[in-house]
Length: 162
Image (cartoon, rainbow, N blue to C red):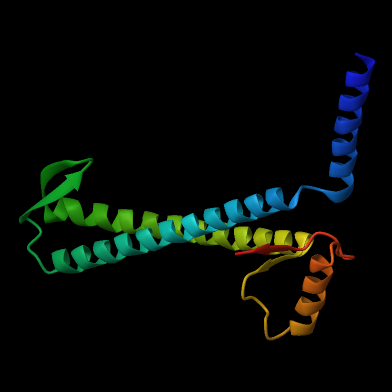
């Protein structure tokens, strides 16, 4: 039993002390970076989707402005088609458009903060994307690739992400 406890103790001791000194493994860094990039992409796609909704709202609002306010129109509310008048629908559409604009502004500020967070993370862990900075730092890239091919890098954990 003593041999088992000492071997497991040394393994866990090595992992915890190594984790504190060198930080997360390269795989963990890449996984976290990819997750952060995916979050930013999903924010961007949501913002683009909402922009399209604003365009649709604008088109409908412009069309309904030229129509008699007492005319019947139909509006889809929660999957149910509801009969209303233009006079009732137009203010609701304008309010929705304003709310969607506010949501887009909020998403854009979140995307900017996520971009700053991503940049800080890249700088902290020396993450380089494939094809990035090939012209600017060719000498530096060649030196770091020689170090990594040689078995050990002097600068620490540089991570290349595709």
